[in-house]
Length: 186
Image 1 (cartoon, helix red, strand yellow):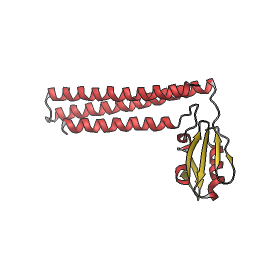
Image 2 (cartoon, rainbow, N blue to C red):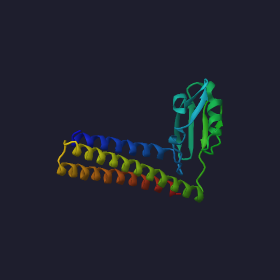
Image 3 (cartoon, rainbow, N blue to C red):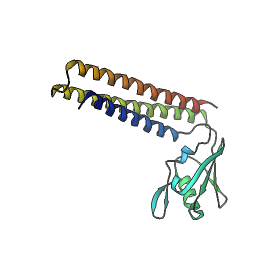
Image 4 (cartoon, rainbow, N blue to C red):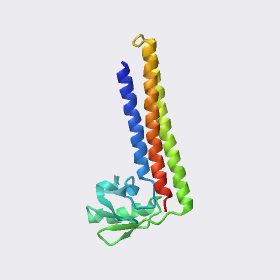
C-alpha cells in the first residue's frame, strides 16, 4: 500500500470521526430550540420504529419552541407519545395538526451536565482519531517490513499522519469549545 493510500485512508477515517462527533453535538440541548434535538427520535408507527424526519417536518420558528408538522395527521398521537416517552424532558402540546414543544431554559446544573457530556463526546472523538493514527502507523510499518517503503519514507508517512491527527484533534476541540459556549450562555 503506497504512502498516499495510507494517508488518504487515515484522513477519510478521521473526517468520519469528526462528522460523528458533529452529529452527536446536534442532539445536545442548548438554551435555544434546535430541530436537531429531536432528530435522533424514533417513533413507533405502522409497526416499526421510524425516524421522526420521515414522518414530519421539524422546525424552530422561535428561540424557545420546536414545531413538528406530521405529513400524515394520523401519526400525530404516535409522535406525541414518542416525544413524551423520550428522555429529552419535553412536554409536547398538540392542536390536532401540529405539535409544539416549548424548550425550557436550562438550569445551571443542567448546563454543567451538558458541558461534561460535550467533553465526553470530544474525548471519544479524539480516541477514535488516535486509533486511526495507530492503524495508519501500523500500515506504514507493515509496508516497510514487506519492503514497499524505505525507512525514511515510513518515518515521513508517520510524521504526516501525526500532522493529520493534530489537525483533526484541533477541529474536535474547536467544535467542542463552540458548543460548550452555546450551552453555557444564558
